[in-house]
Image 1 (cartoon, rainbow, N blue to C red):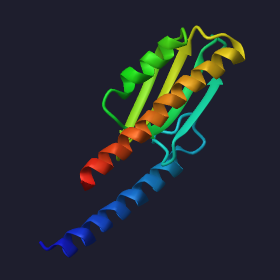
Image 2 (image 1 turned 180 degrees about the vertical axis):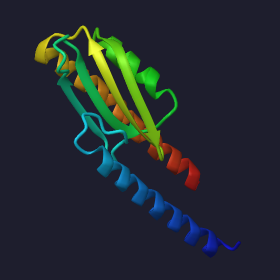
Image 3 (image 1 turned 90 degrees about the vertical axis):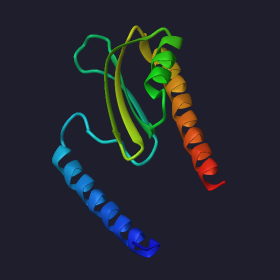
Length: 136
C-alpha cells in the first residue's frame, strides 16, 4: 500500500472508533460513572454519597508509564489513603476514579486537588516531550 492509501484507511478507522465511542457514551449517560476518559484534562472532586467520609477524585489525562504510582504518591503526600481505584485507558487517555480516605473537610480537598493537578500537568508535559522526540 502507498502512503495515501494507508492514510485514508487510518482516517476511516479513526472515524469509526470515534462513532463507537459516541454511541457507548450515549449508553452510559445518566449513570454515576462514565466509563471513558474525556478528551480534555479534567479533575473533579466530591465527597461520596455513602457517608463514610470518602473523597471521590475523578481525573482524565494523558496516559503515561507510572501514572498509578504517581497518583498513589500524590495521595500519600497529603496524608490520604486510596481505598478503591478504577482505571480505564483508551487511545492514550486515562480516566482514574480514586476513593480517598483520611482527608478532612475542604482543606483536605484543596490540598488533594493541588497534588492531583500536578500529575495532570506532568502527563501533558510527558506527552509533549514524546511528540517532540518523535518529530526529531
